[in-house]
Image 1: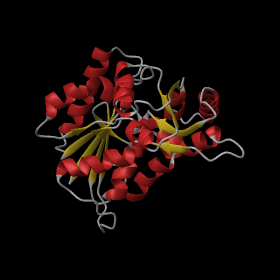
Image 2: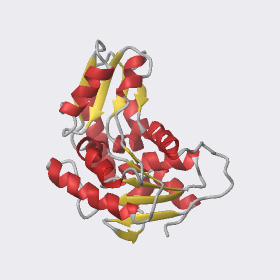
Image 3: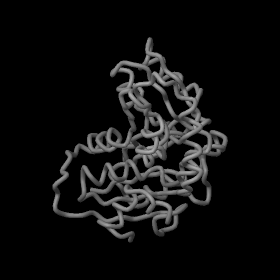
Image 4: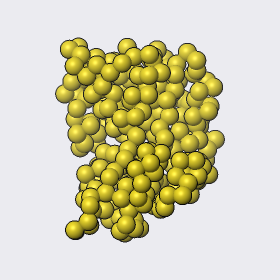
Length: 261
C-alpha cells in the first residue's frame, strides 16, 4: 500500500502522522513545492498549476491514493486534481472541521489563512454545516509562514494576534489550515481563559487519513508490524524532509520509523 500526500510545505505533516499512526506499514510519498511556496498569495490559476505539478510528481510513484494536505489547495485546485488523476488515483481533499464543531454546540471560531477567511468556499461550509451557530472567522496573519519556518517568535506573535480576535465565549476553535495543527498545544494555551472550560480544538488530519483508507478499501491497522518507506519529493526532486519539519513531533515521527529514501 502506498499513500501520497502533497502541500507546498510542511503543513502536510499532521495528516502524514495520522496516516502513519493508522497504517505504519504504508509506504509514504510526500510531495512538497519549495520552489513555489507559499501557495496562499498566488492566483487560483497559478496555484492550481503548481498543485498539478506537485501532484503529478507524486503520481509518478504510483500511489494508491493522494491526500491534498492543504486547505488552500483544496479550495482552489481539488476539481482540477481530481479531473487529472481520478479514477486511477483517489484524491482526498482537506476540509475544515466545521461540521463536527457546529454539531457540538456552542460558539465556534475558525482560524484560517487570510486567503481562506471570508472566502466563498469557507462561507459556503458555514452556511451548509453551521447554520444558526454563532461562528467567528479569524484571519491568522503570518501563522502558516511562521510554522513553516519553525520561527518561534513569529509563531507566538501570530497566535497571540489571532487569539485577540477570538471571542472569549468560543467553545470550539476549528484549525482551518493544516500548518496550525502542528502548534495545536500553543493555540489551545492562547485561547484558554482562567476559570473557563478549555475550548475544544478541531483539525482535519485524523478524518482525512481515515477517509483515504476508506477510498482505498483499506482498514486501520495501527499494530501492523511492518514499517513503510518514506520518499520525499521537493518540487519533483527526491530529497529529504526540510529541517524545519524536525521542530515538530509529527516531523520527528517520520525519520524515527522510516528514513527518507
